[in-house]
Image (cartoon, rainbow, N blue to C red; front, side):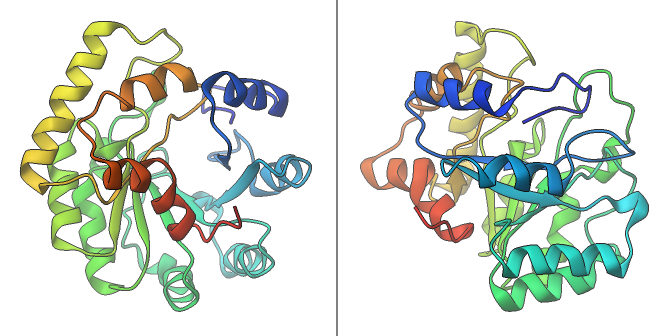
Length: 255
C-alpha cells in the first residue's frame, strides 16, 4: 500500500479492493526508501486496526545501522511484522551486502522470511537495475540455506533467471506480482503474455509449487490481477499453495 511515486492509498481503499476481489487477507509492505514511502511503523499502525491486514517491515539501506536491525528484530519477535522487505535497485546495494548479515542470521535462526524487490523499477523512479537482478540473491540463498526468501515480481523481465535461482535453492520462492503496466486496467493481450511467460517458467522449473499470488496493489486492481492469475495452468495442489498455503507457511500467518 502506497508507492514509490507517492500515489498513496488508504487502508479503506485496500479493504474495499479485497472485498471486490474476494481476497481475505493482504500483506501491507513498508516501502520507505530515500525518505519517501510508508515506514515500518506506518504499516504497523495500519494493520493493527485491521485483522485482515498483516504488516511487512522494510530495510532502509541508506540509513542502515545495527539499531535499525535491532528494531526490526523486536517487531518480528512481537509479531508486529511478519517479514522484512529489501528494495534492491531502488537503493544501491546488493542482496549479499555484509551489513545485512546480522538480519539474515537472525531471520534464518528464528524462521522469519526476507523479501526482495527484483526486476524493473516503478516508472519514473531513478535506480540501477544491476542491483535488482534476481541472480544477486543466489549468494544469500547459498550462504543462508535455511533462510526463507521470496523474490518479488518474479525478477521480471528475468523470469527464467529467477526460476534458476529457485530451482537451485530449496529456500527460495517467488511471488507473481508486478507484471503488468502500472495504474492501468489489465488488457487481454497482457494477460495472454503473462500466461505465456509463466508457461515458459513452468516448462523450466516444472511446477508452480514455490510461487505465491501477489498484486503489488495499488499499482494494479486486485480483482483483475486475480482473474489473470486464475488463468494459469494450476492443478488443485498448486492452486492451494499459490493462493494461500505458501504465504501462510512462509510468513507464519495466524489465519
